[in-house]
Length: 75
Image 1 (spheres, rainbow, N blue to C red):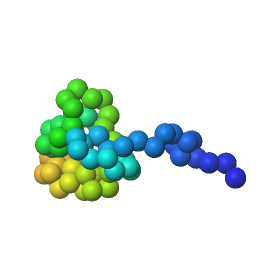
Image 2 (cartoon, helix red, strand yellow):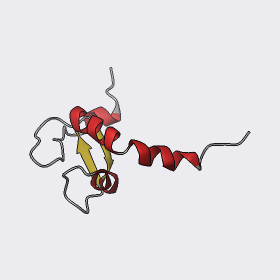
Image 3 (spheres, rainbow, N blue to C red):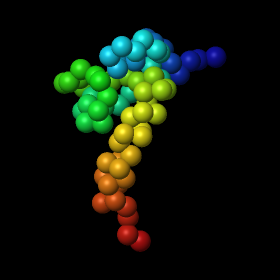
């Protein structure tokens, strides 16, 4: 059986300072920094473990909702 292409990538550690857990998701570095996560500024992508991804979702909930209001289709 052939593995998915994304499954062959190296396993990365969470990019949040002080966390060494295995990363499960990645988001833009700007979004993580704006949400208040303790990541290095200027990174293009950051990798987050399950716990820090949940924290990111909670911290950025209002911003993400406001961002999608203008994109909803009328019809």
